[in-house]
Structures are given as structure tokens and as C-alpha cells.
Image 1 (cartoon, rainbow, N blue to C red):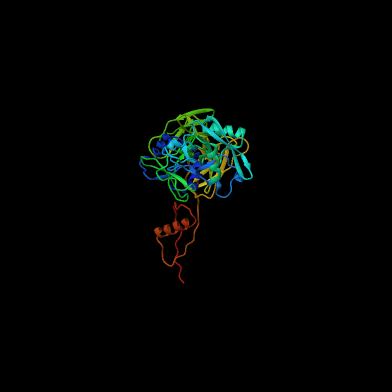
Image 2: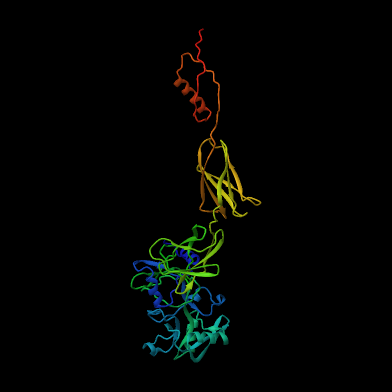
Amino acid sequence: MPLNWTEAQSFCREVYTDLATIETTNDTIAVVHTTPSYTGKAWIGLYNYTWRWSLNDSSLYGEGEAAFTNWFPGHPYNPNGQQNCVVFVNYYFYYRNRNTGNWFVDYCSNDRPFLCHIGTVNGTSSYVKIDTPLNWTEAQRFCRQNYADLASIRNQAENDLVTNLTIGENVWIGLHWEQLWSDGSTSLFQNWASGSPVSTEQCVTTEFSNSRQWSDANCSLTLPFICYTTTPPKTEDFRSIGQDETSITLQWNKVNNSFSFILQFNGAEINIPAANGDGPVTHTVSSLTAATKYTFTLFSVFENVRSSGVNVTAVTAPPDADNFRATAQEETSITLQWNKVNSSFSFILQVNGAEIDIPAPDGHGPVTYTVSSLTAETTYTFTLFSVFEDVRSSGVTITAVTKPYYVLAMNINLEASTLLSDSDLLSLLEEVFRRFSLSPQLSFKVLRRAIRTR
């Protein structure tokens, strides 16, 4: 799912913690091991990186003055990404030439004399040199406590002033490499490819090759990206997929094959091992009570650290109604009766492919319901479900038959243009019965035949 840098940052913050922060060589290895088969580039969290002055008061710097530098030839040279603080060179034997007043990068942990910024007089900076060797961070703290900050050098005139002030010494000044990562980290670890970064206004990618080196790229490019998480991500699509009277079956999407799970309910915890194979994880919780609501909390677990967890509520199925039976039949109706479960349970009655909702009854005693508009002398199958919280029981089924229609005797006068036989008369009578939805089960006797003449 390639995204631009901003979209990748939003995704990582929503689903995980943030875009990846890389602070050690081991981190670079861990990143490429996330997808060993990939050999391209992917976004990491670094997005703001440049040389900055410790004294960051914008009112101090005129146009272009914050960007003034006077690097020693070949600098800034930082092949291993660990030399992030700047030394003012005024001891020319250091490089066997007379390039005094130049700057070079060094390990911030080295102890050196340093130069503090006192303030400005008539627009010109004034400085004081401190001879006590300290590392860059300690020097910065000393200057901030006792003066303004470590020295800023804004132009060539101030560079010449510092040269005269520091003859024969190499001292810390306030310029340092600063990096800002998406998660707010200021880790200074670097692993730039040769020739990078080209610009300090772009976002950063890591190479998924053996080099694992970084390069800058336009932030609008769509690339794969690396997220990190301080806690495992929450599981997705946690849901109930089935239940009966004593169990509920739960399902969720697994995170990956390394994550196990903890299912919490009723004050107990169930450890569920990491799932093998593809597809969702399914787990059935048994030995539950019928028609009861349960709240389940699911945690994904990695290295004994659990996610924040997701919740789902589900209910077990209610018990079936007892003593479901037919208590009366007519030609077009059947009356059914059953023992109600309790006043909270409604019912669904299934007949002929249709469903009838029957609300929870009031009062005591059995439930009685009459099904109407039926066909006489017909067998019907009825299935009754009790319902709790929209979950129905397994159902109980009975059959019942409507009464037939009875015609005890009929006198019929028929006129025909020809003489009808007994079989002809029987056929006519059967058709009359069918038209009235009556079963043509009959016998007849012809009392008199007469032929009329006109």
C-alpha cells in the first residue's frame, strides 16, 4: 500500500505508533528484516534535518545570517553519522596548514574548550572563551546557565573576531546537526548514502538492500513505508459469529504469526497461542449460561506486551420453549400453545416459509397463539424459536393438521341437453366441490332421471 510521506505518517499513527525512528545500526537491520524479499526504498520518520545554531532566537539573525558557514575543506565530513557538533579551528598544526578560522565536525562527546555568546553591542556579537574542557552538551548547558548560549557566528566579520579570540585553540561553537523524527525524537543517528541529503526540505527513505542507507526524496512520492509500535496493534474486526445456549464463537483478524492473544471475560483470562496459516482466528468460549450477555476484551500480545484491547458484547442463545403443541384445529386455523420461558423472551413462529413475531407475553401461564387463514385438511409444520437480545434459540418443531370440510347431504337438480351417465354426474359434482376448495370425497345416488321434451 504505497502512500506519500504525510499519508504514511497518518496511517502509522492511526494503526500503530508512528513512522519508524531509527536510532542504532541494529534498528537499520530490524527495519529491512520486516520484508526481506523487498529491495526498493521505503519512507522512515525522519523529515526535518539540518545544521542549526544552539542559540535559536530568530531576532538575532539577519537575512542569510543563520545559514552562514565557514567549513574546513572537505567538511562537513561525517561518514558514520556520529560527528554532529562543530569545532572552530584555530590551531593550524591540526591539519598541517594555516586554514585557521575554519570549522569541522567532531564527536559531541569529546571534551574541548568552548566559546559562549554573551550578547550583541551595536549589532556586533561579543563572546567569552571558557578554557575548561567539556563535551558539547555540557558546554551548551554552562553557556546557557552563565551567559546566553554557545557562540553563534553570523558573518565573516564575527568569524574573524572569534579567530582573534581563540588563537591556538580549537573550541566548540553552537552549530550542531539537528534531526526531528515524526514521533518527536531528536535522535542524531545517521546512515546517509553517499551524496545525501541533497536538500533539507525533503523526506527520508531507507534502502532495503544490504546498504540500508538513507536518501532524501520528494515527500509527495508514493512509496512503501515502515511503522513502529511501542505496543502491539489492536486486532481488527473482533466479532461474534455464532452462539448456542452454552457457548459463543468469536472471530478476529490475526495481526501476524508472531502475535498471540489474551481473551478476557468475567474476570478471567484465556491465553490463545499465535495462529498458524492464513485467515481469521476463531475461538469458542464454552460452559456459559443460556440467555446471558457477556463482554469480551481481546488483547494482541508480543514479547509479553499487550495491546490496548478491543471489546465486543455477545449473548448466549435462550433455551427453547417447553411443551410446544397444537391444542385446537379448525378448517382454516390451528391453535398452538407452549410454556413461556420468562417475561423477557419473545418468540418467532415459522410456518410455510414465513415468520411471525410474537411479543413477550404478560402474566403467568402458557402462551397461546392461533394461526389463521390456513387450508382445510392440510398438514402444517411449525417451528418455534424463543428470542433474547435478537438471538434465537435452536428451535422446536411440531406438525398439526387442519380439519376437513364436511357436507353431510345435498340435493342437486341438474339439467343437461343429453342424458348423463353416473360417471358423468360424478365428474360434475367433483368439479363443484373443487371450486369451493372442498375435497371431492363423496358418494351419490340418482333419485330420478327425466327427459323433457320441448
